[in-house]
Length: 535
Ligand code: G3I
Ligand code: 9MR
Image (cartoon, rainbow, N blue to C red; front, side, top):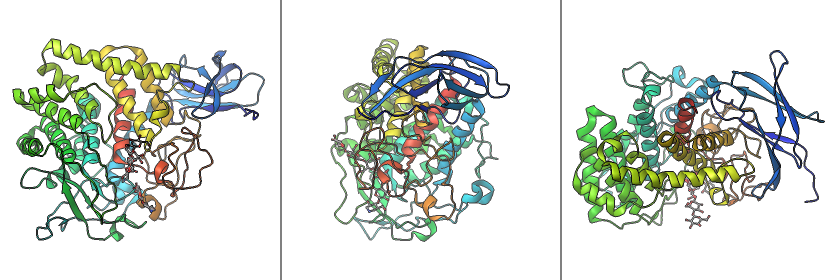
């Protein structure tokens, strides 16, 4: 600790939502008096002193907090600290948060497989169609090719992985179920915007259509549709290597069952199709209850391997129970349901709780069971909220959270906190959720707002093949970069080895600067919550 760092400000660079908590982090060794003025007329609107600074080991910085929540009028403001020329400007604007929300869901349109992106919808990111996926070889049964078009590319790569697709698809349907009024009539200029269905449901349908094709005749579901090696850094239309479906497995099949059973509730016109797909998948999984996926020798693409299936059984059983009311599924759910935790591609236990505690669950579970699950859920959310309260950065992230996709972890924590707030009206959950959204939008020590195109300093060189190969300076907008973590699995040249500051805005850095559908989905959910809830 010889080095004295200068003052720095970490803030939400997109704009604070008027009704929410507003914190600006000041890097300083001692508390500072501050004033906030309205940039429109120069009037001072708030003054105060930052909190007692605290040391954050994950970034090796000493941080203090300026609470500017008292400002609720939309506008542009400037925060000045005493005895210093340093200042920061910030915005209070629901409109900017709404634009961010719409961009983060529009990102799925930009990642559609088997579709040309028309300039009317994609603007300068227009592109030719890639990956028709009408002739896919089954690696285990080459004589039986299949057609498996549409769906979203997983990430910066062009493959389609059931496990990761499933959690993303569920999360977006959850957003619809929880904020239907917000989504009814809300459009973001996609080809289906003029039809009668909400854009969110149109976008999700694109992926459900693909997922259905991944179910084999016996009910089992292929783990992924992939090339043998990752594609070179070219546009979709130029990435023409043969694609394969690879091995059926327990995780993919149960994940598929959970998604399809949920879709049966969300799309009344399609209930029979989705529900029978879900029930056939469930049957297959009960006779193959322990079949983990691992890459075959000649396949090196994303593995999404998992060998712990209780959470997938719990989630699939839950959704099937909620959709059918069938007691056999309730029994299975009781067998497998453990304690809640933050969801991720390999851990779906939290998703079961989100459904059970939402309107579907309230109307299906008896009161005693509902209350018990709710208490468990709020216990978990309380741990997250306490984590935020003791954090010098006021963010519910601890050392274990800085893994590959740490920003996705942040947004999944935020989604859990949003549900906890909905269930309890306890503002500590809402504040912790807001703090996490602020965190990915710039209230962090890297200086980045991590959503492409939204903020003052945003990722320009995401590990996203389209963005890298398209000769357009700006990356495709609305994507959440993976975020800091110090695994350095790509061996790029990082200037920090600390968990919260190991981030590189470079194509090289697929371990911190790739984007994926499963990190954007809880961002969509959380920003919707931010716009819909207020204390
Ligand atoms: O399971 C171990 C755990 O036991 C250990 O304590 C921990 C310590 O680091 O590591 C855990 O394994 C991690 C694994 O994810 C499971 O969480 C690995 O370190 C970590 O490298 C691995 O990262 C995954 C990465 O693929 C590499 O497989 C990410 O979660 C996953 O989001 C990412 O997904 C990729 C796809 O493969 C391909 N498409 C792009 C996508 C995003 O980058
Ligand atoms: O581009 C690939 C990215 O989408 C994956 O998430 C990542 C991890 O599996 O792998 C990337 O591909 C790299 C490969 O693993 C190693 N050689 C360099 C590739 C990136 O240019």
